[in-house]
Length: 344
Ligand code: NAP
Ligand code: GDD
Image (cartoon, rainbow, N blue to C red; front, side):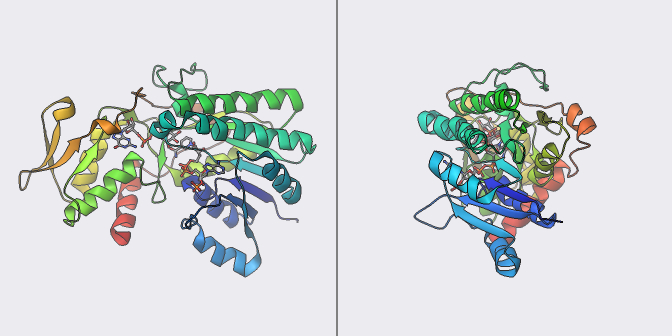
């Protein structure tokens, strides 16, 4: 049987690197798009290059960018993928307030460009599209959120992603493209970017324990997130594209924790018990064993708008996709800590 061909935009990121591993294990031929950068940006997938490209050419990287229509159409024409996964995005919510135009270009129009390429090339019958939609689109909507909860996006990132969400649905009905949204809640792993709060907390906690850092500076400790394990979540992306009909699905664990809960758990797991004193910008986290302040609040890390509470109800995905999160929250944190201890 001919191998299935996947094309991943955003292969150098957390999800792209984990999805590539997942698809290679399923014997896909995986093509990935990396951006030109002045320094190497493929550290998350370098081992795949060695293991799969050098061995059997199952893995191939191409230069590209979702802001470049010509590049997208050329790649899709050449590769003729059965499945496209659009994971490419300026994915940092806080940064989207500082680069709103670029975020809209990459996160909203990037998806449109891929859909247009499928339409112009007349690949509707052969090429499916997965779009990385996000729980951030719910913004201020009441939790728990599900597929019927109205979106109330409140960041440039969320608004851009909402455009992509709707254009995916629109091209599905207008042109019969098998295009689907996975509305994924926060998901983390060893491969998580260092400026997202979970990875930032874990890296700092280990450095503080090893006396290589004195203080961890954080923003809002009270927001609640439904954190899942990215290794479970990339499986759902694949499952979404294996259904008979295209549809949109929400992927979450159903459990929410505050940022402060996360901080307490991480420090406890590495052997530091914390006590908290003060309020607001004056709140501090103190190492109970030596009374030293090791956590402070810095208003730099607050967003102009905060999304206070994201907790997802993924009943539809559990039923229709037969997907459910397998890796427990504590195991996810422990694996992230183990990775960091080995690599710090
Ligand atoms: P990530 O680690 O930030 O990865 C984003 C990827 O997109 C990177 O490979 C990045 O390349 C690439 N990229 C950025 N701008 C691009 C452009 N203009 N053209 C081509 N590629 C571009 O994000 P992630 O956590 O893996 O998330 C994957 C996708 O899911 C994103 O679309 C994100 O918005 C969405 N999402 C994530 C979560 C989550 O909790 N992780 C939840 C819901 C939705 P570089 O490596 O060169 O920067
Ligand atoms: N990044 C960061 N840094 N966040 C902090 C900090 C800090 O120092 N201090 C507190 N936070 C709070 C943020 O205000 C937010 O409420 C929460 O921690 C999580 O922040 P992030 O880890 O940056 O993730 P996010 O929820 O904003 O966005 C992630 O999840 C979305 C899905 O809901 C990203 O992966 C998005 O791409 C994704 O769409």
